[in-house]
Image 1 (cartoon, rainbow, N blue to C red):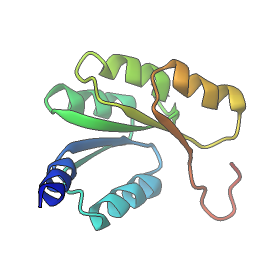
Image 2: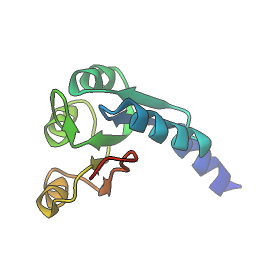
Image 3: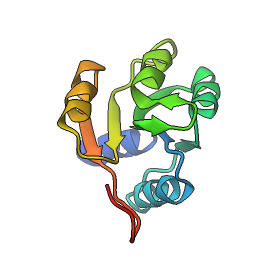
Length: 121
């Protein structure tokens, strides 16, 4: 019984997803919703993410590394002013230096982003 209560608590936590690709952002949100997470915030750029995080209690950040108005690493550094939440970096290209950089910036995990058909990552 305790296990079920704990999972309900986890699924109630607020997750911030930041990705400038609207389709990918919605795909991640849908996957989380399908798994029972329902408190999900989405942002398409750094400005939206910072605005959302200032007034929310964020439990997890999922950040794209390449954003139109900055990068996910710098964004996470700024988000640290509002939250101590762990981060998962989405990396849409396979450069080992970028992956290694995610650990330097405090990442707990990095994930190679899924590409759309006909695109290269």
